[in-house]
Length: 509
Image 1 (cartoon, rainbow, N blue to C red):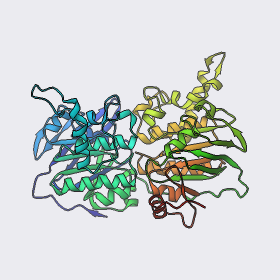
Image 2 (cartoon, rainbow, N blue to C red):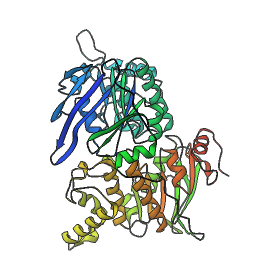
Image 3 (cartoon, helix red, strand yellow):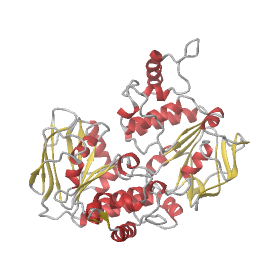
Image 4 (cartoon, rainbow, N blue to C red):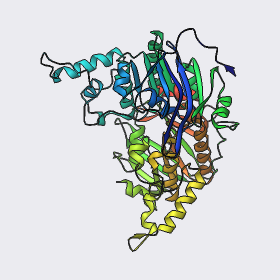
């Protein structure tokens, strides 16, 4: 572990001096300080709730601090909002996506700088060509600027968020979890843009929970814990960083996989499913197995998971649950006790949770009929079940009545998993469940997956992180154009093999 070198001769491009910020009784920042210099990429890491996003929001003008100061090139600035920060050449990609879904990609990309006529009216016909030219300059050719923001994928929305800021050429670029929705190829695209900006003299501040990304892009790393910085380093290894982030040692990030019973019966069988092409897909998922689904973005992963949950059609598919043919026409069919299928989706905030409602209500939503008598919910039973699940999963919340939207991302994900455990689901469809979750909480999710598999749950697991697939799964099916390009199992199962199979179309035999 090597501490960062001494102060530079030039002033930091952006700095925080003893910032504090509280939300009610929660102290998000505690006299935290931080700085980033022109031409460097500076990573900020820590657990969910450590204060990273609050720091970014204050530096980006979205939140005012309760105390402390923000300095731009050594001068104290009072940022009244993101527009004021933009005027200071501070651009921010916030963790929460801000695209307006009813507007087109072009309208979102060019908001505030639309091509206008001599009368200052927006030249609507010029919007799409102008957006297309901007995107082409960033080597983005696969996103239609005429499409509505609601019609493109989560990863594509994230790319447009990044493009909207990067094309303004800020001198300070703040990126809060920008890779959480991106797969490796898209991460490489983003890192190329980051390197271009830093080479041109911009200061780039970057948060991520993917250690491999941090070490590949960052010149310096600052670790946050409990709302304040605990150290800045030129280099630090992952285990030491986790210890500083959490205050405890994690011996190994990935727990050992439990063995699949030799006579494990198929929990789920899928045949003749057509996802993105006319080529059919077949798979078998056994009780006690973690079956990984990998491959590049847009190859049919989302369609597969939504289709198995009844949230989208699976054309021509034959589905068997525990050996019996079944029809899943809606999520209600999937959740039904005889099937016991559950989906944890990629975007927990818009597709999984009801953010204003308390943790208790989000946990018990699928089992309200079981908790009701004569149409009236038995409040005592609901409270006991929700408290027991909070304890079982280690959900960090002041109590079951806390609005779920106020919890950290990792704890929100635990609530989603806990919901389906209460529903006694036997087949779990986990779609990028560790996206945007800190390293320590990832470890907790990994251990939970292993425990559930050991109890006989069948888990279908998609991840945009190939290391997760390689270390957590008994087998991995790599999708390409809606079919299985390869099936990998130990000892051939590793991250490099998954990437190679995704890039080269070799049908599984």
